[in-house]
Length: 147
Image 1 (cartoon, rainbow, N blue to C red):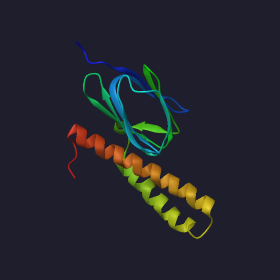
Image 2 (cartoon, helix red, strand yellow):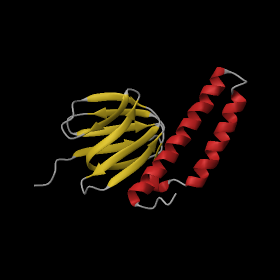
Image 3 (cartoon, one colour):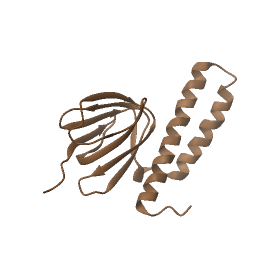
Image 4 (tube, rainbow, N blue to C red):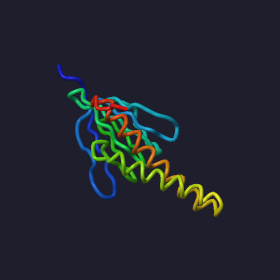
C-alpha cells in the first residue's frame, strides 16, 4: 500500500513553481514553522520569507525559497500563493551573496533616511537570506555541501 499523499501547488504571479502529489510540506508562517500532512485541518496562514521543504511521494525532498505569501490547506490540497518562490536548484549562490551585500549596504544607508525606505531594504535583505538558506539546505540534502 502506497503512503497517503496530498496535492500541492506553489504559484507566483509569474509562474507555477511546483505542482505535484506530496507526502508533507514544512513552511515558515508568521506564527512559526508548520508541517502539513495529508488530512491536516483546513488552514489559511501568512508566510514569512524563508525555506519551504517538500517531501515528495518517492521520499525525495524539494527545497524552495519563498519571500512571503499565503498558504491555504484544504481537505485534499495545499496551495501556496507566493510573492516570489524559487527552487533551490535554480539559485546561483554567488549572485545571492552579491545581492545580499548590496542589500546590507543599502540597509545601512537607509538607516539614516526614513522608516519606509529602511523597511523596504530590510525586506529585500530578508528575502536574500531566505534564498541563501534554501541553497544551503538543498546542497546538504544532495550531499554537495563542501563548506
